[in-house]
Image (cartoon, rainbow, N blue to C red; front, side):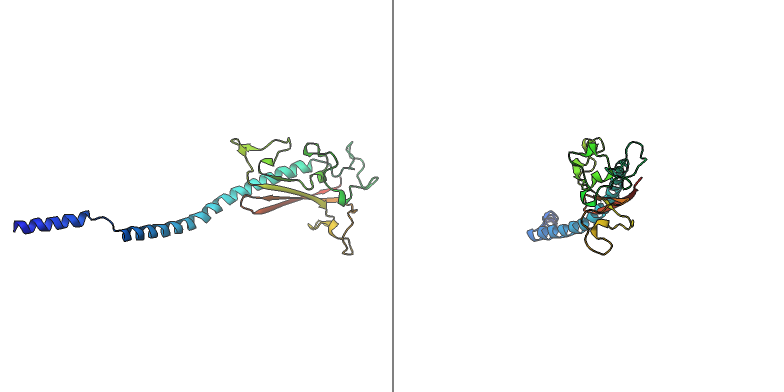
Length: 205
């Protein structure tokens, strides 16, 4: 009776101390991998969605900063800057549509009219403030991964369509068009690749 009890106890001990087989380990790893893929698939898009509002807020702040800077300048290179008693197109024509953009020898710190900003394209650490300084947060660029692009063109109808694209007959313009309304369009592309467009109008005064 005692020998039988001893044999039964040894059998139970072997059953409790038996490890996993190779097949069980492989199956466990596969199941764990599948579970992790499902979790990552669910959490990944959610984390992306949580950061996008922050990107959009930063894009809006950047665009507003640029619009404020640009609108502080004169309407045109030919505008009267000694009191504004005479507008361009009254005595001297405003800048022709084909010549919008920085004037010869100008850089951002010397821009003096709004269409000087036409073609401005900055990315990441190259996105600077009006003083030409990088905008930093804890030593890193506040707009890392962002792109800011500016276009300025005549839009007399205020319909968002560049007047220089076609004349009233539908023919392509020759770049000689002048007007009294310019549209300032700023496109900010977030690190996620989402383009956000901001615009304002400036009248000749």
